[in-house]
Length: 355
Image 1 (cartoon, helix red, strand yellow):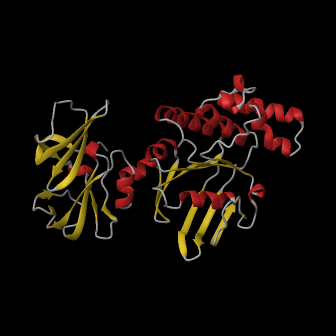
Image 2 (cartoon, one colour):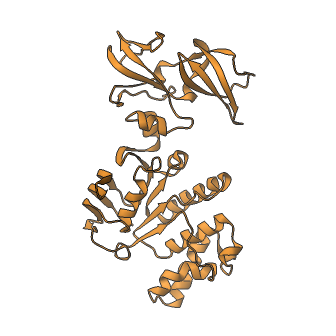
Image 3 (spheres, rainbow, N blue to C red):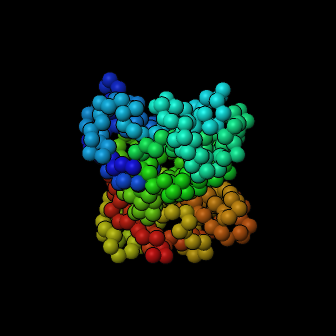
């Protein structure tokens, strides 16, 4: 287990800068998730920590030791990739023990570590099988077991569940979280899936455009997003946004619709954006809207509306039969409103309506 410190890290390829001024402290045993859209720099940052990419500026410390110039094998880190990278001619036990055999570990030590790791991962009955006889989820567990037997200072996961179907991803998320609790190992996990980030992380690092946008617990990013990007990226469906301005404590939408704002919000603000999550919108009384699309999800219904000229979504458990073209009224609870200024920064955070 290890602490990590990333200070003013930068990564460039020629004149192209893909990471700029990255600062992040990771505690011993913490599970950190780097999340963001494709091209945001999250995998590049992970590979810099692993030593697979050179750092252009700044420093990376593992347990107070600068590792910028250390090769990957000297950093004592295990990495689990999106591709399983198993040796097809080796059985599960041999795949898991390969790194130990390279280090000339004795046979009893290898046997003990493989047995312990396979027990944690439910692979005990599969140790003699070749990779071709395993399911996708089993292969991913073998790849994780190969990392576990090394007993590294930290685990790095690079979108390890991307090749699995939705149900199997759900099962593997639970297994990874339970495994982390059992091992207590420092872990950094990269994903573009915000649901994975929310369910796995002790803290989320939201990234966009080569910069860290916000660091915090999953509920901190959900309840108090730092800016429009985080507000729209975290949460499913994403937050609704309506553009307008604040005049005398009232939000004025582009079409002239006015909405009184709660106390604590600015009295005047030009170029403002109002945000509210679909699950916090109520049906029944309020602003007029027209139904454009109805999406049943089983546990609820997502209504796509047209409100004040803007696309607007409502997540509701109300199963009344609605069809495109129907007229509804929506309420925007004051305690659920977020306000963002012209620079896209949050100026008035909203707690959850039930807080």
